[in-house]
Amino acid sequence: MSEMKTDDFSDEEIREIYKLKNIAIAGISPTEGKPSNHVSKYLIEKGYNVIPINPNYSEILDRKAYGKVSEAPDPIDILDIFRRSEDVLKVVEDSIGKKEIKVVWMQKGIYNKEAEEVATEKGIKVVYNRCMLEEHRRLFQ
Image (tube, one colour):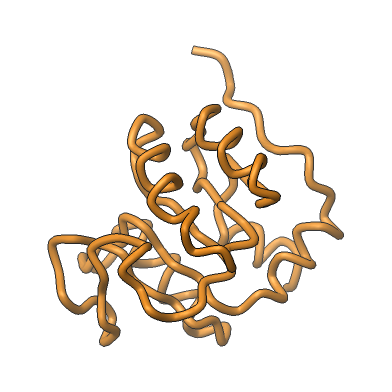
């Protein structure tokens, strides 16, 4: 299998994205040690407002969880997706109604071309195949 490519954003552009503070985490797990849980905790520690999105739980990391992005009343700047690539389009289509989303971020190993096109058409930046924790550490530590 060929190596999945990554978006073309420069480090400077990625640094700008980290100035946005409200991050919905789609596919967050309440399980300690799972990547989505670990990354979310890291982002909370760094001062980000993490909004859990998981239809199977009402609360994750002491925060109210929502079944879908569209159900979250909070403003959302970044939609960070921990779902299989084939499930990403559904998540993005549901969230497009939340007009304030500025960035769709598909975690490492995740990419969906149609989802990228849908978001890009709406003027939303699309980051993919990158980990929010790894990139933050790389750029800010």
